Image (cartoon, rainbow, N blue to C red; front, side, top):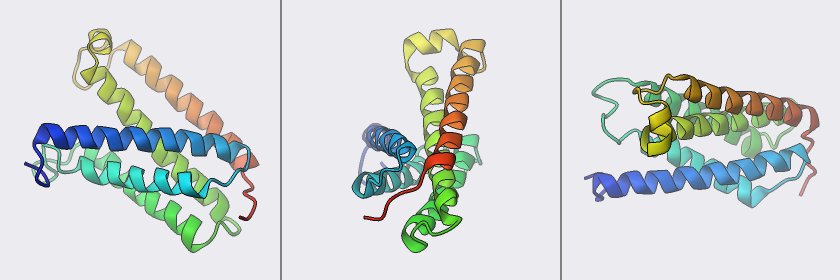
Length: 168
């Protein structure tokens, strides 16, 4: 039991939270390319991404048992999200805080998508057949992760060049 839920229910809630965070984050990311402020959706993205990272820790194996790469990604994501929230809400995107926000928010989104790809190759039978090792290491997995990385690098560079949010 985790937070009064069975492990299966908790994992399902974690996955739903993660998918909401990713969808909201992708919409916010493309909004940034057009310098559009989306305060409500941005808040949803940030809150659900924080919840995603935080809710991953209680899923066995627990952090106290052994520090895993997934835990390190969760810790990194939470640090990036804290900086993004400070840049957005504390510093109001003034000066360098604009690009600091964009970079930290989008790298945390990338990390969430990175984990989604890993989990997809582990849990979706058709993908798992292409990369059966745990963790996945076969060429199809590497190709997909490479495409995701290149996509995010290109979009993040575009956002850093274009993102000039207008005040609300």
